[in-house]
Length: 208
Image (cartoon, rainbow, N blue to C red; front, side, top):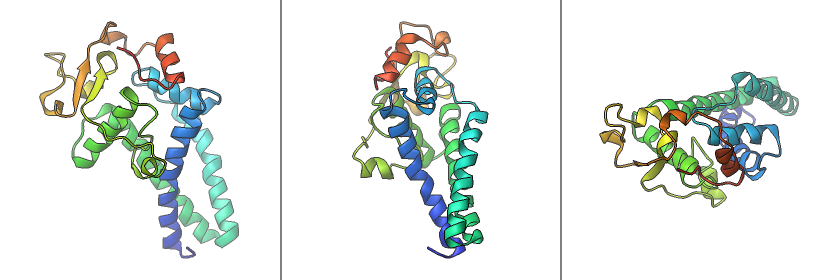
């Protein structure tokens, strides 16, 4: 694609592949062998943990600058800017979608799919469903599994999932989720426990 609009579209499509590659190969397959993997596995082991935005910026800016430089040299600076802008837009969409999945209840069919797909990855099969915004590359690399009812460890349960009065899954989400009662109090879900880190490094879901 040599048009500005074509390169913008290419930039939009570039991120979903990197989303899969980073999450699967650099994050999980590496088993903590690099800084990104260690941060990501901690995200699996500690409730509501996200890598600091400063670290993401330090990693992202060189990548975006390189995409602009390479495309600009190859196809002109307007095309380089268009591709990079599409890339950044797609990346920011992922960041917002991922964080909202953890902290905000679903509002429609797509956001419902995102949450079931993503929390199946967290709590049932960390080796599956690496795509957060799209299943495309999970399907391409045969790592997609269709979630049934997702069993969520009580101490890791998202705040939006739980009825504060009953301590159980809110009625509107019971078709998609059920709780695995935990031996550890829910209040301790945010603690960084060695057992949970070990499970994440081994590619396993957290225990009850």
